[in-house]
Length: 258
Figure (cartoon, one colour):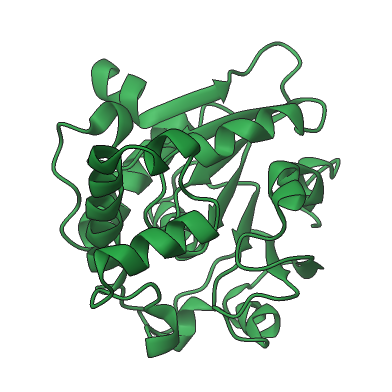
């Protein structure tokens, strides 16, 4: 699995002798590992940074994209287990928040290397199930609408916006992830025992205002909700420095409190 490991588990800032724990990040709808690379300058002391690459993008571009949620969740779970060579905090934004929750529950059920804490960002609680509000962007959106969504939310770097071929690839990737997202199903009663922190934004029109309280229902252990400025991806400055707002990265023992 060495080759797959190299292209799936992306160690943005590799662990060293000073590392206390690793922040392991799962991608959002249409996104790769790129948006997490900027976080390397904002990591608290003793924290390493790893991102999981989904199939069909970056170093795994020759692989077919996952066809449904189950396929991607199984892939992501295996990748997180491969990345867990020490204490870690699992993070997911938007669709990635549901994926991080699903992965954490799968690892717990299998008695695997569970994260010290789970951090979910800008996503509704999974126990609501998939609703029309969660299906945004939507599969019926035009290519132009998807490009507008991605560019407005800072998902596309300048070189992609300037290249029609890269734009086409970005849209294809977004559509593949929308297909996966729209097959999400919540298994009633599923909860997670590790501490949970939920992050949401003041002006996010994608998720429900009550999402912070709703997540508490699926967290059996310690729970906290923090609200940050901006929209679905916060403000650009907040996003670039998001690790400083992730409480388990600075707690002496995140297994006890977030």
